[in-house]
Image 1 (tube, rainbow, N blue to C red):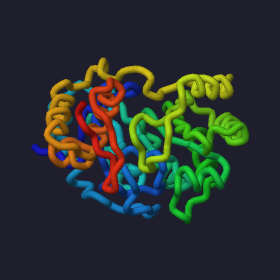
Image 2: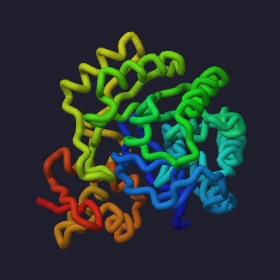
Image 3: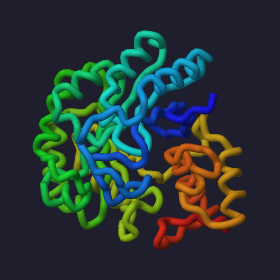
Length: 311
């Protein structure tokens, strides 16, 4: 079977061997973050719909999981916000009922957690990886560029309420962008708010490869360590790419080589590579990040997006 909604397993430093489940098309999201490596949001929405057919997702999952694959996690992520799919609760129930050995994770921008029904739908998962990059409305709007109907105070209240009811694990990600959320004022707001959310881990991240906006720069390792120290005594770690991903068990050298050989012939964007190689854009971006980190390839911003070239 050729899978349209499953991808990977993806080489993930955090999740090990992770099978991705993509519930929305590229790029349906409630935010249009300046740093997003998947590109600009084309459908900025908070409307929950059956963006891809639920039965198709369940059919693909049954075909894949009936083979009893070795997985650390099945992860709801992809090219948009997974909680926008109104059938995510049914997918969770299907997996937990039929394949209880597998742990479930959700990567989310947290924006739909103000909705009590959404919170109830996802209580059955094992790991939530929400993001919270800003507390002040000013920075939230500049950095995350939300759907205008979203209110950051309501999103934060939703995170707090979910953490009270959830028996699983929460790893809260904060993506640091210089000049936006690395100021003393914003970091103090973040620390106070995260203390109320009480996640099991706070994970600090910064730019791994070119984001949506070309002016975004990564934060230095020293600065990230300063921010981590500021967040203490919260349980905090730096997940930004200051170490290699290619030792992760699911890292496939053949995929890496396919990418290199393709961009040797002509420069390509991540979307080009995804379409040409038939590999999900999230998976492509994991390998591009590694190749940029190693210095094997370079990136150049052009009108159509970021193009990658082999050295």
